[in-house]
Amino acid sequence: MSDYPLPYASHDLSGQVALVTGTTSGLGWRFARVLAAAGAKVVVTGRRKERLDELADVIRKDGGEATPVTLDMTDADSITSVVQAAEAAYGTVTILVNNAGIPDAQRAHKMSNELIDRVFDTNLRGPYILSCEVARRLIAAEKPGRMVNISSVGGFHYAGNGAALYSITKAGIARMTECLAVEWSRFRINVNCIAPGAFHSEMMDGMLSRMGDISKAFPRGRVCDPALLDSTLLFFCAPASEAVTGSIVKVDDGQGSR
Image (cartoon, rainbow, N blue to C red; front, side):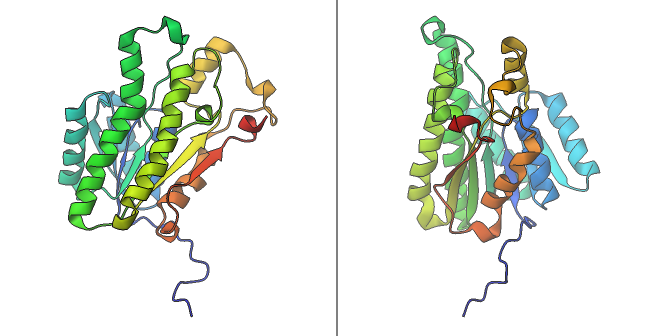
């Protein structure tokens, strides 16, 4: 007979330490607030210190705990330092959300090598290094952990002109999820992935300003609110999802199924 409660579906993250990248706007800003509201102590990271301080203040006013730490995803030393800072503030990071990402916004043959490096480093190399650093510490501490990687439906079909490298790196994030889930399963580290469609964010709103209102082409005629990702994020981070690893959930409002 099962000892689990009925239903076994709590989203209580009390006692967890979460590190979220790319929290200065958009989806990351929302993810950090959601995890804090669920009881986790949250380390908010990004390049714009004033925005990190603002977010930390918002979380504290909401009754949560947050520490802002600047992070450059293209700098391996910065990545190592941010994990050390998180551990110094709250202890071992048990939840990692790899959210930071940038678009290419140029045709592939017109991209400079500098931009190519920046997109690869921010969208794929940096998250890989960060995941390994967090995993290394979880394994040493003999603690279970949850990692949630933010891909995109653009990782599964070409996202449009000027998005080739973005699509490639987001496909890489999805595959990274599957591979690391297998490698770290024995250590009770779950690695999962959310692939959003068009959700309001600084990146998406910038694209809309360049391309016009693309939502009319979507089956439901809308660009979604980031709040609609809360349930998927909490599902992957919740204690009750201990058997879920290597999964990729597309949350695209039917946009990517056309």
